[in-house]
Image 1 (tube, rainbow, N blue to C red):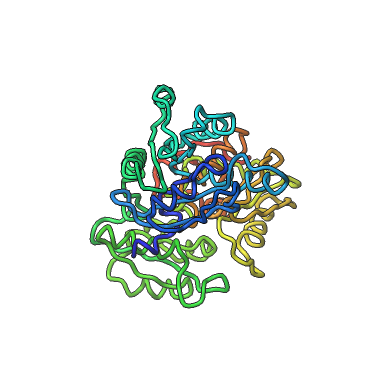
Image 2: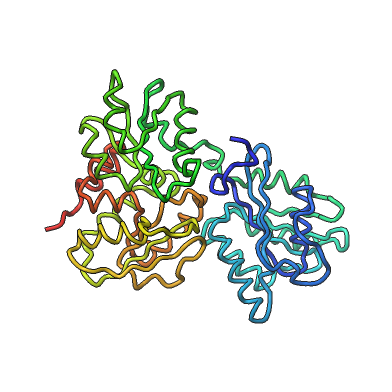
Length: 415
């Protein structure tokens, strides 16, 4: 996969924050060595988040996000600030930009620091415009004594930018530099996986969907190989093999049909469950799926989709999952749906939240939502796990993940 075509969800996302007119856009332009954001002396020039994807060695693919000033004013300003705070949900590293003349940090910046700390986001304070005004050493030491990394820059001239790049590299959490596997660790080297890919109205014309493509690449990266078949051709495909595949991975919508075809001795799971492990927290999502047993007619369920595709008649989140859950519960349930970055501030009225596989999200964004649910003790799961549970094939779908399967086997069962 070319670095420039790496999806957003696989990039380290670096958010640039601060008050208006402190040089956030200049810092972005200097870091990328391109005129990405409009630079002006007029406060509030940046109105919507500006994104720039690039490669930054040795980190790899990154996504810089320039945000509107956190001190923006007026009705429109409040909406811009809301958008800025939404970006924090997916920020892996935060650059908090201030000007040398504006030290010490004020309440706007302190509120951002508090939010970064709550979400455990590494932060670098960028003291910009040092060419216009040198910061007092005691102010720099005060920031450092508070445990903050500090970089002094003059973005317009480029001064200090190399030091800022080094600070960025040092701020990347170690786990983000380690390769994360989707399915490669589940398939012995040199063995084969069978991938079941329905071609229906939701399949993009002429190509596969992102989780399927990423899974194929991951299997190849681990020196294994795969066969791809539609669910209608699966039985014939298995019959042509001289030995069974090490793993079968199916689109969750075909779980029932595929589970009836694949012999029980062959491990079976879904792309969505693989992504529950990759992007989220599989044990938490297993417990969330088990909460389906506690649903009662009349309960309210939130369905959250990461992407913003146009729904079709048999949409999985709006039609199929609600249908399967209503059949399982034996009565009507109330469903709400959100897409993209939209996620309710108040989720207290929901008895369950079901998320998609989050292939377009980075892990930080999904984990932020998991924490939000955990704080209110609201169960959360994802499409594949909810489908497998409601169809009665949960234990089998978890067989490739022994620890997660054990959570289910030792947990309470529906009377």
